[in-house]
Image 1: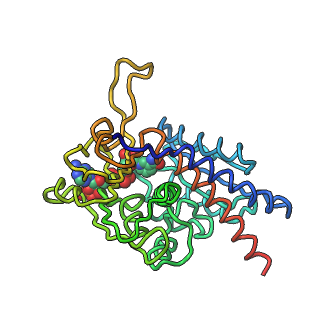
Image 2: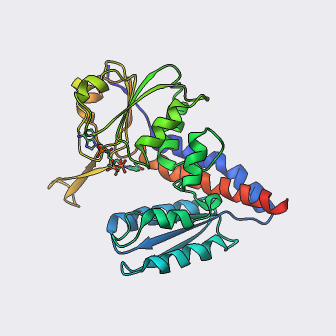
Length: 297
Ligand code: NAP
């Protein structure tokens, strides 16, 4: 029997719906959560992501600002923009859309964002708090994956999880989150990567397999255990002359093959992707709540 689809759009909609009560409560106190996105250069994919984030804010009634800068922006100028946003009371969340031009040091920019406005959850303060299992702004995509599992009552406790990919934004944080001694965690986690020997042998151990690789259709059916839950984070463009744009989006998982073997599977698009934006909205609301409680003390 084919796997049940994990519908990221449905889960994201339910998360956004739950946020409405919290937003109304803030608004009743005269506070509108605000998100600022800094977009540098003219990468079309980055522009699309930022537009989607601004649109999500508008739909929820959040305040949003998009600051567009040319690719020639210097490190100092970017840091100055970030500092200004740090001090702006209308802005509760700041994100600097990646990829950044090569001359900009991404870590240094992240370090300049106030940790309580770091709605991407990339600041080392938030990363450290996440690692020690304390409340923090969590990175959106990994947190979205946990929410997808929770919605479908897939409890990772005691399960073998294999995460393929060890990036700082997806692979490593989702592995840490799933290994925590906490609800929707307690998994036995393996992190695989490009140097992993015999990847199929490792991935076949997984009750929950998370692919965050960034290459089209690396995970085939023979790499998946019968009945496993497959979460595909990848978003890859592959040429397709039959489409208007000349390409289509595929994941890191060969969906057609793996849907026949998994118990649950995320599609691409429509799986993890919508969750990233939903969790960004959630972090913006959380940041707004935290900053306003703090200000009252
Ligand atoms: P990344 O920084 O490029 O990391 C990719 C990881 O995959 C690396 O750890 C790499 O290993 C590993 N890898 C590459 N080829 C491999 C192979 N053949 N076998 C095993 N491991 C391999 O990518 P990322 O930022 O984590 O993103 C991963 C994918 O998720 C991308 O397609 C990205 O577009 C997508 N993404 C989607 C969302 C969303 O909202 N849906 C959000 C973020 C990212 P090494 O470390 O050894 O190089």
